[in-house]
Image (cartoon, rainbow, N blue to C red; front, side, top):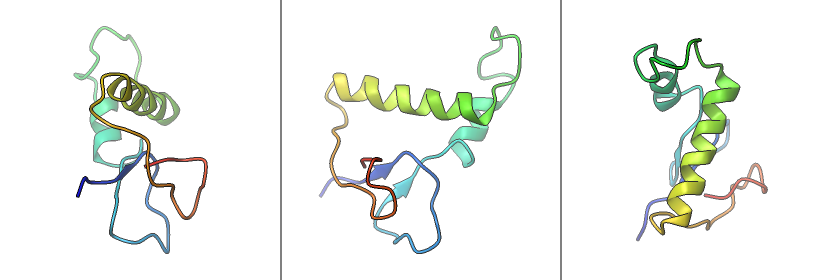
Length: 80
């Protein structure tokens, strides 16, 4: 069975059946490190790192590596 990754933070009441990828977690922190995008010129905000995460999902979807599937029970406009 494929894994489910939902591009938002885990919220109270969310189950453990999915992985949550948000700008506040480890991957978002990695994106905001000064060495990740050294030519950007300024530190990324959490909003900018969230947008990068959404763009990564969109690019992977075009390439067929991910596909939109299950909806989050907490936020129906965020697909996993």
